[in-house]
Image (cartoon, rainbow, N blue to C red):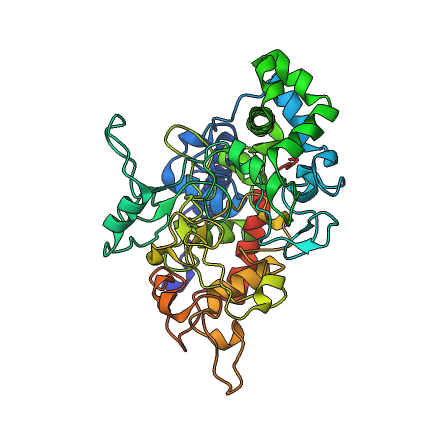
Length: 477
């Protein structure tokens, strides 16, 4: 008889036949608890000292918690009381009596409640003696201009003592030079000899003082006709006596000098007042490790920086400089994007009129440099979600329309441009055909061809817009 089936397993030292199994269970349980405790400890430690986290842990924290695994310290402008000159400039900035209409100030078109941009959704603002004339272009925001360099073409000279080369000569040298491709993180002053710096959409002013002077004498803005006319208004406003304390009495006998010093006061106000460069958006807080991005915002940031997808950072630089200066979200260069014509503008009622940016019609020194026709300054994207009109002709009214333009311009142009009487799509219809070669077709997302799949999905676009909203100043954690 086989009795092996009746053999009883030997007892353990504790008299239990299955003592090994509970021990294994306890080991697994304790191991799981240890791993969980370690993860919690890493998370707490990372929030306190995120710069010390290993790469893998940093990626986990970014993906799971939306924190910046590599925080930085941003070097913001010093916030100090306004100088006397800046205080005078502030008064002038808000004074409507300096306009021909008596009702329009600098702040009318550069509203402090709208990031010093337009306060409404008009494509262009109304001005002139009776506020009935359309402006030429939408007023850009006045924020974040304190670091804007003078207008130039190509890289800065190595030897600053060298006699400057004229813009015309530099532009001539640039002809035939291949345009550098825009990839995320590429710094300004590329070897492509493209224009950069300057103020206004076409860079025709080099200083904030010159920029402030422009609207005073523009017939469709504040519409003054001479320095003498503005000087009389400054005298009536009491500004001359205030400026005399700083610059002496000679200015009282020179309208040109008086107006010049008054506009220097406006420029000092823009430079000194912190509201023009706050750097306190959610993105700034995230850069310093003080805020967390939502999953959509984080996806949008990655798409923004992805040089094969949205490639926004190719022109709108998103990373802090090595010196800790916060990113301005512009490379301050000029691009010909080929945005569609805005038929609502009064100047566009003339089918032969074209606003060609750097080569005219509102600046004249580069009119013969046709390789720049259609190029306009790349604006900062800080506070972009507060704007209600976009591009140099105000053709678009929301960020979704803007993103659709970038995404579909080449792959589905029929969704961007109108058709002529014969049904043909009028692609690049706001630039003369002979200058169409200036338009960027090399950089993503413009590097797609007709019929290709667009670079971005609808979800991608929603995520990028979510990220753009993190660039609005005044974030409260």
